[in-house]
Image 1 (cartoon, one colour):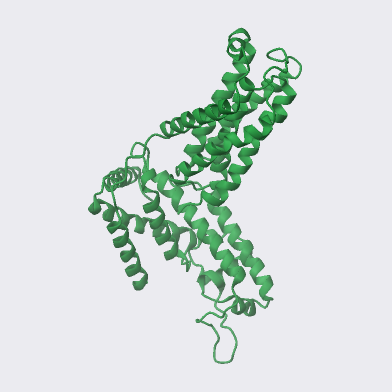
Image 2 (spheres, rainbow over the protein chains, first blue to last red; image 1 turned 180 degrees about the vertical axis):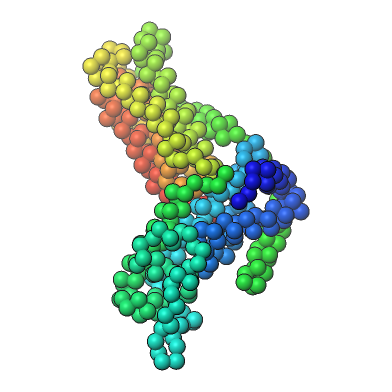
Length: 191
Length: 217
C-alpha cells in the first residue's frame, strides 16, 4: 500500500510531467508513459490476475491517455483523470472480448489435450490466482471466464472440459464478463 | 512476456514520437459559454429570418414578474445544461447523476412554472404573434446548435457519448423552445406541446448522435 506521501509525490510528479508533455517535452512524456505503464499493469493485475487481455488493456490505456492528453487540466488532480480513462478502456476491452467470445468458433492453437485425448484437469483456481475480480463471481461463470480468458482455451475446448454445450459456455462467459465489468464500474477509483 | 514488454516499449516510443504541443485545456465553462453565445445568436437570427418576434414581449418581461422569472429560470437551465454537457466530455470521477443534477433540477423547476401556468398563466393568454409550424421551427432551428455542439464535444474526450449528446441536445433544443415564448403566441398548453416538446426531442436526437459520433478514440 502506498502511503500518503508517496501518493502525493506521484501525483505531483505525474501532473508536472503531463503538463510538460502537453508543452511538447518528449523526455517528460517518455518518463510519464513508462512509469504509468507499470502502475497500470499493477492496477490491472491486482484486479484481474494474469488475464490474457492484460497487456492489451495496458497498451490501449496508454493510447487512450495519449489521445485524451489535451483534456488534462494541470489545475486539477491527475489521478482521477487518468484512472477514469483506464477504467473506461478496460471495460471497453472486456465488452469487445465478450463480443469476440460470442462469435468465436475457431480452435485455439494451444489445446490442453493430453495423450489419451482427455483434457487435463488443472484446478481452475490455479489459473486465476490473484484475480480478485473473479472472487465474487458465480462458480459457473467464473470457470467459463477462467478457461477462455486466462487459460487460453477456445470455446469448444472449454465447453468440452466443463461438459456443457458451446452455447451454454458462451452464455456463461457473457454473463461472467458482464459481472466483471459491473464490478469494475462499481469500484471506486483509487484517488 | 518479453515480446509484450518490447511491444509496450515500441508503443511508448511511437507515442512519444507523435507528441506535439497541445493548447492548455481551457476552462469548461468558457468553452460552453462560447457555444451558448454562438447557438443563441444563430437561433435568434434564424427565427428573425422567418418572422418578427411577438410585439410587446419586452414590456411583458418588465411588467409581469412571473413571466420574467420563468424566463430567467429557463436561461439558467440552458446555461447549466450546456456547462454539464461540456463537463461530461472531460474524463472525471463525477457520476452522471452528479454532472446532470443541477441542469435537470433547473429544467424541472422551469417546467414547474409552466404547469403552474396552466391554472395561473404568467401573462394573459393570447393568439398575438402566432407562428405557423412553430414546432417544426423549434426543431429545425435547434439542429445547427446540436451539430456544432456534437463537433465541439468530439474534440474533447467524451467517455459516455449518449449522455453527453443528450445534454448538448437538451441545451440546443431548449434555446429555441425558450425563444419561442417571446416570438410565438403565449398559451401554456401550446407552449408545452409545440415549443417545449420539440425542444426536448432534440435531447433524444442528441443522445442517438452522441452514441454514434461521440465514441472515444
